[in-house]
Length: 302
Ligand SMILES: O=C1O[C@H](CS(=O)(=O)O)[C@@H](O)[C@H](O)[C@H]1O
Image 1 (cartoon, rainbow, N blue to C red):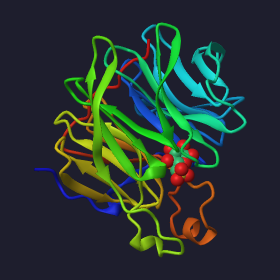
Image 2 (cartoon, protein in one colour):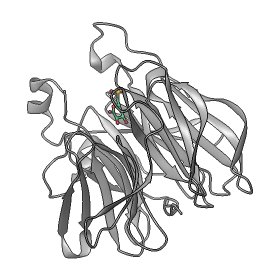
Image 3 (cartoon, protein in one colour):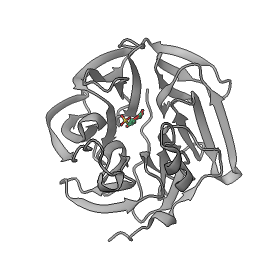
Image 4 (tube, rainbow, N blue to C red):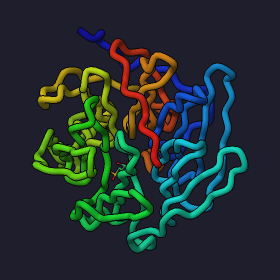
């Protein structure tokens, strides 16, 4: 049984808000939280034990990041995949963008338990023309097409189930995953949400599925962009909990802290109406909340 949480239970990290925070992950070797600010062209790190914040400006919008086994990060930016050295701040090219960077950019990405990096793109015009890619053995391969905003990547505790969402279509998908060769099969809809009706009062709109994380019980946590809530689903698709938020736009949860029981959540303020920002001063902040069930540790990208 998990506790009920209220919007006021969330705490903001004491760092300036991001325009559009995304891709938080807890680095177990550094006891640090990393995330990116996409339109802010920056990578951020917060070390709670030292209350130390580091910020690296980047030349191209970063969609997501993941730790690498030998140190440093994999960064997926509009201009391709890069190895990022957090000691020197240098970027080394790994792969060119597989799309037209004038129209698309990388968005959400996660490593699978074997270290392949799965990364999806979004179309700037939100047309369903972007794809989900797998980066393995130095090759970037397109595996799923017809996506508007690729998001929500996560793997089950046994590594045999893969989740992804398309924020644009308001759907979360699930499929069987074979870690031996990185193949996917039997994709089906895991959850589907009502689209926004033009002119609808936002208080009546539940939001669209954005970034996600899985906990040690196999529950899938999704942030609902514009829905002012985070949802926790059982692996069966049953809705287990709804966590209200003090901000309208949550973008991705992750589990951190030494016990992986601190739920961190990136949020957005870019493009939001002035009256909403005045009422929700934590918009863009990384929020945190202690939870009962620990999350899965981050997978490293080879
Ligand atoms: O840029 C982004 O925006 C989307 C939300 S939306 O497509 O504008 O509705 C968000 O889901 C995505 O993760 C983020 O990178």
